[in-house]
Length: 59
Picture 1 (cartoon, rainbow, N blue to C red):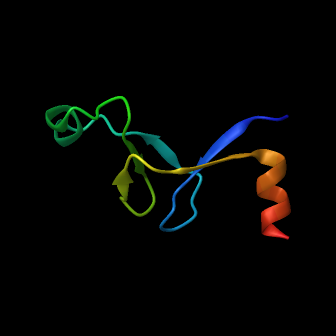
Picture 2 (cartoon, one colour):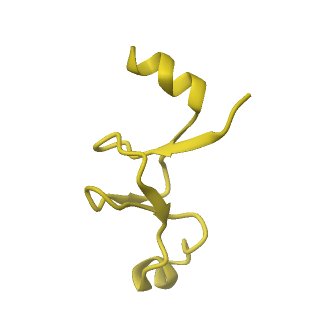
């Protein structure tokens, strides 16, 4: 098994980071919420795949 990567469910970007915004802090989801840095989508549910699975999916 290789490295796990997170994928934005909206735009399929790998540029995802934890959502450390005030909104996430205020809603109590600070450590469970993520943000796509490409399209701005925020939420708790992001696709997480092994790099090998991602390569197979792109074929």
